[in-house]
Structures are given as C-alpha cells and as structure tokens.
Image (cartoon, rainbow, N blue to C red; front, side, top):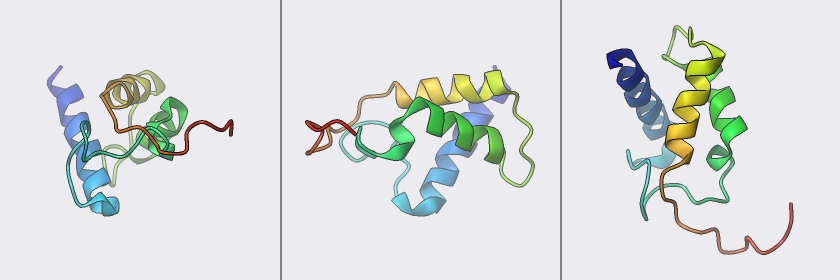
Length: 85
C-alpha cells in the first residue's frame, strides 16, 4: 500500500512538472474532463511508461489502478463537451 501512494505522489509530481503548475488532482483547479489525461486509457498509458520517473517499472495492473484513482476524482466540466469527438 505504501508503494501505491508513492506512485500516486510521483504521478502528481510529474503532472506538476509537465506545466500544470499546481498539484491539484481534483477540484476546480485540476485539468478539465475534456483533457486527454482525464481519459483512463491515456492516464494508464502515461503511468505505465513513465512511473516512477527515470525508472518506469509499474505493472499494467498498477498503472490502471493509479489511473482509475486519479481519473475518478471530481473535475471541472469542459465547456464544449456537447459534441461527439
């Protein structure tokens, strides 16, 4: 369980470094539900290939667990989400 939380913190740190300039993984200051990282498959793929930083060694199941946790958090609605994409 401790490793899981370490990985979550590493993921949030990478999101911070990537240019979001906040560590908010949920709430009004987080990325919107229209962002690419709000999609489970995108977040899981990112975590699998990049976590932990400089030594990616997650299993596919661990990457999916992390992605499910992060993408399940409340997010602001994307303003133009009424069109299919």
